Image (cartoon, rainbow, N blue to C red; front, side):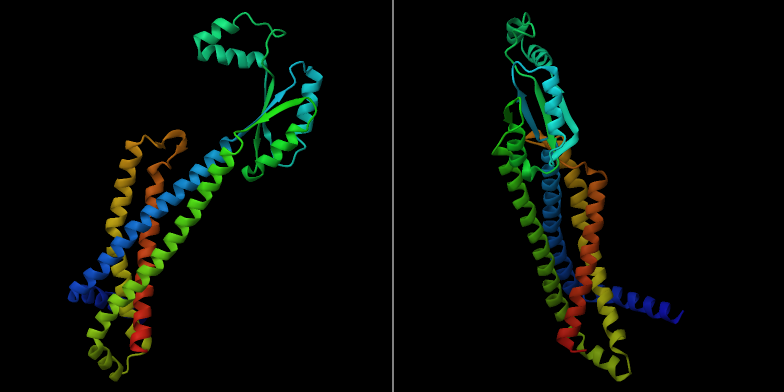
Length: 301
């Protein structure tokens, strides 16, 4: 019970201190707010870039064009050779007959329909294909080369060059955004520490009195740590509101995609609420760390 009373008193004193030193508290809150807005934007960008990369990796397909005069037995042999390759997703190998491909072309255009409508299987110049998904996009070029060496496979296509560059670009962006988030959090912690240092120095006499009456170091530090936590919570309110309503509005405006249906945004629910919880957690931890560092370094407790 005594521990709860001490805790309650520290929390109460921290709230009083925040409002008693309102101008300095406002400076800390503003610092946290501005930084967390940038952090929120960076985190949202990072998660969406990761989502883009995942979608592209799932959608990338190797198309293996088979010999024009291939038999059913040879088609089966090609399949048997495909399923033993390491980077091939065994559950995502789809055979497409050239007559089915012809029907798809005919549905897409009246011109194709007029040209292809009388084609028989023997007259059809198109090729049967296997559409193959891979488990690791980074190894797609090597896998395509292995598929091309299989007997009765004529040509292999997968958007070579473009796929690797796109995935590589997204990977670089993802790493940069992660570095930015970490850097912003560290900068915020130091800014808060410097701001709270001024508050602490203005209350140096109060702390000296606490020492004279026998207050322990932890009892002196706790109110400041709770004060940092409170500042962190207040500083995260506006970034949370901007995240929830701003991202939802952005998602609605772009109808959930950027440029093309391939690049889809993450749905707002529950994404924005998870980001908001992350923001308030960062605000609290950074506030507590900043306060603790200021007390330890500048008061030499």
